[in-house]
Image (cartoon, rainbow, N blue to C red; front, side, top):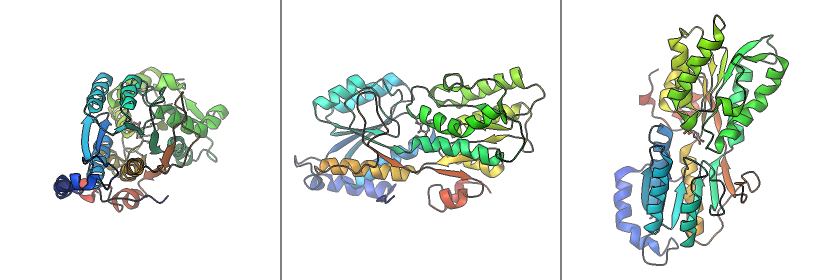
Length: 362
Ligand code: GAL
């Protein structure tokens, strides 16, 4: 995919230049009203590193284009996010870029946004149940799950090994539309082996609702894993854990380690987001894999969408079928996720400049 990567994270020099050029740019960027266009960015939480990177990349990229940017985080509180967006609407933002905390909580505030012709982009997570969302910028979420489940299939060599192997399953937050894609994609890979008896979910917890993790909270995952180990395992060993997100992976690993697992016998544990802490776990042999989603590219396609709309053009999309939000199919631009483990993290995540090598101890 030909993503036009902008100069991202240009820091204070970029910001100062923007302050000087914003109003001069306004007529060129399609504003036509003499003022810089305003973009409001609503991110869910700062507790996960990925959203900090997303917010920083978006802000820097929009400012490079001469936009005025409001960036807010809502501490994973639904009401806080709704009121932050309400404020952005009342301040007359022309564009909203939203990574929703609860995908069904925004109908009211988005209706207000539409009344004043604001363009709404659903960022990474699809907003459900409303006509008032214009575009979706994300990754191929089903493929994220396929990579996670497929990683376990390959790591345990399920095609050839006799097994049986013990596995536990974790899913993300049920109020995040991505959860069902991640879990669905992974189970598409794992279910045949569960049916065959080669993979055994010892806890018996296989339904998405049973294995979900509210707000993707690692501490909740840790305590669920504690319960599973103490109730179901006895002298049995866990061979693999399907985890949809690095924060959950680290919670699961903390549980396993406090139950006595060591580098010698920790199971295969998947993840997502290539967070620095989890990359370090991968280098140290504690977490097995993650799924890298380049948030620089996601920011770039989001900015491209906004610039296109501002210029009166149609943004480029590559999927007009998959993401039905219950009211409409939202046109989407989907990027490709990449599976990362000890064999390719250097090339994919470090050499590409996503993570600075100095943050990782070899
Ligand atoms: C999902 C997102 C994942 C992960 C997770 C927890 O919506 O697609 O990449 O970040 O939230 O934050």
